[in-house]
Image (cartoon, rainbow, N blue to C red):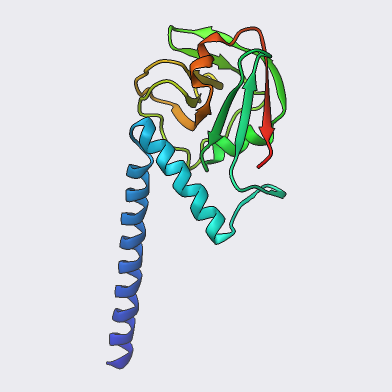
Length: 181
């Protein structure tokens, strides 16, 4: 009888733990979706949390947060990347010098040398100027300089913290590089 009660207790604890993890995971997913302001706030909060817990590892070096500069020589834009596999995949490919292309009336695109891993990367559910995203079906990185809607296969990588109004002016060859923290 004691063994049965013990086993039932253990099963109950496991079920409660799984349910709690599921609820927490759903809450994190919901909190990563939303407006540009929420994304900036979430990125800032995630960076602060990483600084506090000391868990900053991205590959071999330690990084407080991932920031990049995109420039065509005349129009520098600074992006803060989110803490996702796709953002890290892009960050690890830097520096890059690559051609930028116009696409539609609200975005500039480029193709990184390797496809990005979209594991644990939040969907880009619409937004506006300054959102950096990855369109998995085509393998291109997108810099939005006007509002956009969500699309299947569009993942958010980060947001511009400086120079978002210059994205539409980018042309020709651009350089994408890591910024030291």
